[in-house]
Amino acid sequence: MNSPCRFRLLNTGFHNCYYNMALDEALLESTASLSAGERSGAGPALRLYGWSPPAVSVGYFQGLTEEVDLEACGRRGFDTVRRISGGGAVLHKSELTYSIIMPQDHPLLRGDLRDSYRVLCGGIISGLERLGVRAVFAGINDILAGGRKISGNAQTRRLGCLLQHGTVLLDNDVDVMFEVLKVPAEKTRGTLIREVKDRVTNLRSVLSREVSFEEAAAALSSGFAGALNLEYGGTEILPWEEERAQTLAAEKFSSREWLYKR
Image (cartoon, rainbow, N blue to C red; front, top):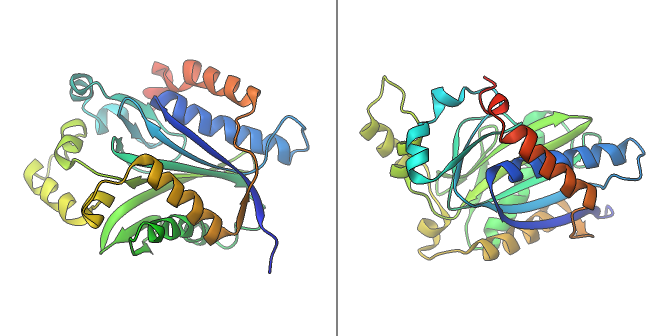
């Protein structure tokens, strides 16, 4: 049997969107610096977190004003942020978000892009099983429960490292989602809402009960450990990682230049 892979387990709780994206990037830089032989860096990490206040994130290649109704976000008190990963616009409200960071030459990463998604998403599937939810990997980067999407995931690769982050929906409000996201002109809002309600689900709907962030985080950390043969060691963010995250949050992710990059 292969030796377990050593990972930090970082349950960082609830933060605003700028800090959340900034800490993911700081952890990516930290992992890259360790891989380059710098003592200041730390190794691979699994991070679990939430969003307060709720926010809409757009993918790196998207246009903010084309995808998001900024006035509606303002009325709701929702923040907006651009991710460093690709993918579509996402409302982060009632969910658990994870990120997993490791060098690109890590033993867990083998095969092509879809293979890497399938391997890493195995941790989510295993975590959902611990909650009593049967789920499967589908497409390139989705996870389905009962044929409906319960988790979406995105990747970026830079500095010789991989960052994959994604969500597990604890609940979802499709009507609010379409209030803050812009609807394509060729489809009516009502039709789109019905379509999404038919193809997206959440833990509350599947299990007919509420699942707390803490319960989902415990299941997911256990699921990743079991599916990927992880051994957790270390639960703290390094002081320089925290300082770097605060800097990135203030100077990059909350800046107008970054938000309106596309």
